[in-house]
Length: 205
Image 1 (cartoon, rainbow, N blue to C red):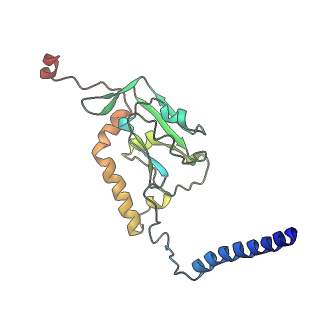
Image 2 (cartoon, rainbow, N blue to C red; image 1 turned 135 degrees about the vertical axis):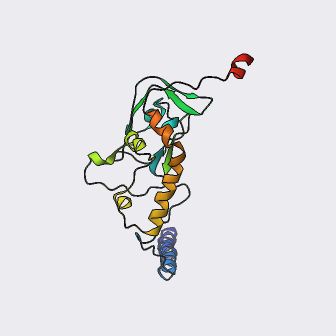
Image 3 (cartoon, helix red, strand yellow; image 1 turned 120 degrees about the vertical axis):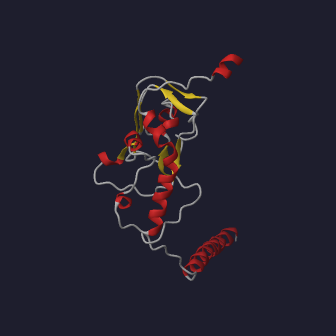
């Protein structure tokens, strides 16, 4: 009797679970569809979306903390000498930041590189598309971008003249964000020294 009861209970559980799953499927099947006509419409990105990084070269002290935290070793940093934050300006000084690159053919977008950064100079961005024709192009040289006054790589379609309105607005936001620190970004690529203390401050000490 017990085995028969268990047999029919299994049949009942099977039918019930299938019915539960199909009811959810059917609910979405008849729901109103929402289709974003990308690329004419902007993709829907969540607030904590982890896209291609944006990098503040002027704040980077090349401490290698991000590279050490990276589980796939896709971050490459080279510097001409020790760097530190100038407390007077909040800008990194010292040896030149010779290279900061990320190989996106290896990057897994885990964001583990952002948290250990002592100067908060590397961030997950809202750039969702970085298609490339070669593996070499997947390695983004952020120091080269800094020479152009950019903090994040631009997709190929964003480099064209005819872009959707949302893409133009996003590009303008990126440019406006980088514009105030453009000169400092260029200075980060060269050796520099800290701002001399004011006479009043020196006298106080």
